[in-house]
Image (cartoon, rainbow, N blue to C red; front, side, top):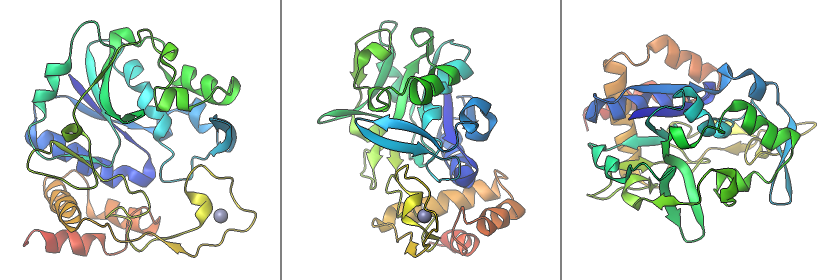
Length: 276
Ligand SMILES: [Zn+2]
C-alpha cells in the first residue's frame, strides 16, 4: 500500500507534518505528496466554473483548499497498480495505521468513512486497478467541460462514476474529525477556518468555499483558534518532530509565513511545544 497526501503550496508545511506522522508509525509504506501545482490541466482551470448540486462554484488555484480535486489523481499516480491510501493534508496519523489493510479486498474499489448521508473522500483507501478512469483529465473534464455535478464525485453520490457500486465503509477512528480519543488512528483537523497552523492570518470571505473573487476584497476576517486544545498541541509537537527530522527547513517556514500560508508565530509555538 502506498500513501498519498494531497497538497498545494498553501498546505505544504502541514502536508509535510502529515507525511512525517505516517512515516513515524509506518516507515514501511512508501509515501508521496500529490502537489496540485504539478498538474497543468487543473492549474489552467483557474477561475473556471463548476457545479455542486445546482450551485455555481469557482475553482481558484489561489485558495488554501484548492487541492481538493487531486484526490482523484491518486490511481493515475499509482500507475493503476495495487492499493493506495489518499488523505487531505490536514489528516495526521496518531498510531500504527496498518489495521486499515483489513478492508482491502479484490472486489472493492473504494473504502472510506460514511456519515449519515454521504461518503467522506478526505481519506480513501483506493483499489487503483478498479479506478482506471480516475485521472487528471477525467476530473478536469468532469468539472469544467462537462460541468457535471461535482458532488457525484467528491461525495461519491453517483456511483456510476466508478466501476463498481460497492463502496466499503470504514470506521470513524480512521478519519476522526477535530478531536481524538484513545482509539483514534488518524485525526482530521478539518475546521478550515480554525486550523492550528492558520490561526491569526487575515482573509477575505471570498477565500473560503469556492467563491468568486471580489472586485475589491475586504481582508477583515481572521482564521480563529482551533477549538480542541489537545489537537492543536499534538499538531505542533508533530511539527517540531518533523522539523527536527529535516522534513522542512527554517527558510521554508519563513517563506510560508511571508506568503501567509502559516501563522507568523509558527516557529515559536512549534519550538515551545517540545517542552509540553
Ligand atoms: Zn474577496
